[in-house]
Every structure is written in structure tokens, then in C-alpha cells.
Length: 325
View 1 (cartoon, rainbow, N blue to C red):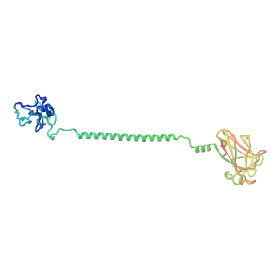
View 2: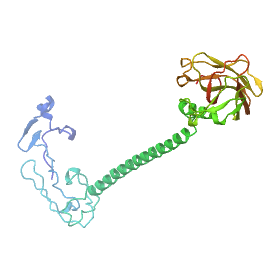
View 3: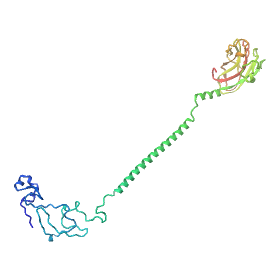
View 4: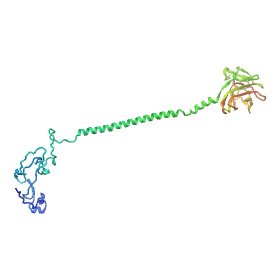
């Protein structure tokens, strides 16, 4: 059956928008109205989307094109094809439901007629697992960092402790240690060797020696006291201290070191400013700087010609170096 065509002369001239152009209007093209548009009596080959089913073979020999009103598709008897066998005839894309042609695979029955989409549940589980792994990794790194920091702090504390152990003592401790090492214990009157008519006594109060004992009667030529010192740490200058009492006029006596007379007299001055005859108020201390040798040394204070020997003597002691107290 040949459809009529009173419009354009060629198929490419069958323009549905021909009414917009001068040549189309000259050929009788009209704006669309009702079911069609374009040139009068032109064939309308438009077919509704999804009208034609894929997989149903067409029977051209049995088709009877029946045209109703203008623009209606012909009625074509359809026959159910075999499962999975495509239609041998060409079907335009607009004839397929849901887009392009399928591969012949039918959707699974019992699935609600829908094709199965992506596994969102599996994706969600995978994402959660990734996040959990990242969180666990961060926690492990932070834990190891804290542990390393604690170990470093611990190692640093041990190093500081071991490093501080061999440090030299403080100045006060050093001075105390040096003082105990360089100062020999004082010797009391009872431990001194007396020469001449020198004698021990304890009548005058104020002596520092044990029992308040002191050496008296030194105010005569030839009388003396001798101290044999053991354990002098080294050769050098020392300070010899004497605790004594002298009232009134200043006194001085001869010092002998290891059998040799020291260069100057031992000064025994009245530093307490006690009046003459008041030995109780005359107790004081004086010193001189002898040179000693390491080991044992002998020190003698004696009354010689020209000396002034009116003193009471109760203690002697040594310190290393030339000091004043």
C-alpha cells in the first residue's frame, strides 16, 4: 500500500518545520494541529515509545497495514518469540522499552521485575571497614609515639642521674672537706712535752683544754712546751695557732721548727685588752706561719733571752696554708 504524499518532493524535504521557511509555506506547509504537522498529507511515521516489543518476530507476510485516522500506526499482529531469541527484523531504537536493545537475557523471576543494582550493602560494609582500619592505625601510631616518648624520658632520667653522680661537691662541702683534711686536731696542754720548770695548772678559769688545764710558769728563760706533730699531709706553709692568756703588756716567745729557730718571734699579744694581772679576762688566740715537711714535725715554744713569756698556754693546732682563722 502506497501512502499518499502531497507535500515535499523528496524525503529530505519532508521537514516537520517546513512551515517556518518560505519555500515550505509555498508548498503548503502548515503549523502542527491535531495529530500531525508539516506538509499536508505527509506520511507520519512516528511511533509511540515502547509500542513495539523486542523479541517478538514480525510476520511481514501476514501484516495488514490498516490506517485509521491520519498519523495512526498500523495494527500489526504480534507473535510471541522463543525465550532469548531476538527479532530477526530491525527494530528502531524508539521501539525498545527502557532504551536500547537487551542482550536477550531476561530479568530473573521473583525479583520484582527489576534488574539488580549495585550491592550498596557491600559497599557500605567495605567503607566502614576502611574507616575502622584507618582509626585503628592512628590509635596504634599514637600509642607507639607515647610509648617512645615515655622510654625517651626514662632513658633521659637515667642518663641525667648517672651524669650527675660524678659531679664535684658543692663549694660548701668542698670547703668543709678540705678543712677537715688540712686542719690537724688541736693538742691540749696535757699532751705537750714540758721543758724547764713549766708546769700544768687549772686555777685560772677560761682555758679551752680538757679539764681547764693549761701550762704555767713559762715566765723563766729555758722553760718551754714541745708538740710533736704526726701526719702533716705535705710540704709547705702552715698556720700554727695558740690559745693563751696574757693580761697587760704584749708578750712574744721563740718558735723552733724541727730544731731550727723560726725567723721571727711568736707574737702573743693582749688582744683581749685584759688589765695587768687579770688572766681570767686575758684568754685569746694568736698565730704564725711556719714551714713544715710532710710527715712528722717538732714544734717548740720556749722562753729565751729577750723574750717576754708571762703567758698561760692551753692549746695548739695547725692548718694548711697561711690563714687567719
